[in-house]
Length: 561
Image (spheres, rainbow, N blue to C red):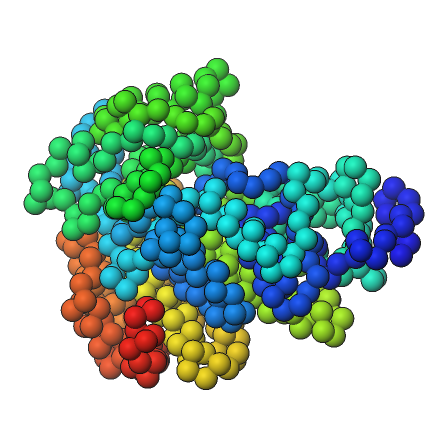
């Protein structure tokens, strides 16, 4: 086949023609490629680097676990389930993953010891205790090899220099002059997206309210915060800090500590370390190395610094400018900017991979059908556009509110509850669809997940939740502007939580004094009873269907949960 490109006319041999070309072989590209190959598509995976390689975004969430199961079951790819739990990852991939029992948050003031009463923690219910700290070097390489096993062709260390579209497809030309032809292009390459550059898709500046930059690396020898905090046992949370993702909160910023050695079968001594902060408050210094800058931050926070006594950095720092970027458009005729190629906000709350897998689900289900009938128009993928933009928009609301609230503990305690109180119903709706599909194998249960008013919201069926989130963002912005004090802003949000009839009362979300939320099996039973028989309709419908699904699915599936 002869095709026109930006550099002239190119002859494309038949063996270089594909159904789908994917730029980027992180989890987004490899999982999308695996799914498409599983359905018979001829797929080319292209990457400028090679596996294994360093990556962050290691902290899992309950929603991510459900999306992994949904993609595995919807497309009959059992290997995906190797990512879904610490036990499966350790067994099938490597003993390099950590466990994640909680999201933990400790507030710090410069030059002071942290007050143990200014801490919050969401310990994941036992049903979610399989969450892990993913060692991305191994998880990403594993899925890349799975994609190749399912039939994808791989070109590693191959850099695209040109992407050209016409009415019949897309031509991707490499720096070495080699060219490939496809019917559809998925750009999963991230920030340096060739498509974003080609079509000038980036908002300049990013449209988000939130601002942050970041620096991150891996260490060995990080001490457990439980061992260096000095806090009395009666003031500590139910789950040890070391068993989950530790967030040390500072004025408009946060450190993360994500250990991989906190699981009895782990043989990985590494710990993921990062510092994310508002670049307007902390401009990136031009006269300091990343090591020097990080050391200066540690000097301000003595309890955090004690975790690093005797620790050693094992790789160079990655130090960024502003992290946030957004795109005016993420879908076009024959192309998609997927997930982190479309935009990025902040790693707070660990939503990146969950968002990515949700987009993979929405895109691949449509692309499978498009390959059958030859219609690759942007209109067909309109929901993917709304989903990607919604995921970024609602994440901006909660993350920006959080950064504002870090300076005032009561306000943070209130924002923490707005975020945490809807994780369970957001996850339950996914589990409900999966259990229905398990019973009858009907695809419509997964398609119905998209029949929602607010794509991208982590409980997208609830207008009351949307209102609560947006009102929280507005209240925090008033505090930031000086129109409200911290206590006044906190009072507004706590009042909204108490008055909101879809906020789960069983976990203690309405009780300001319950800073550590740790649902036991009995608490989960109370929550399910409330959600099924006492809550308003929008929650009641989720609760009843979820409970019915568990009961009807039987013991075999209850074990899977």
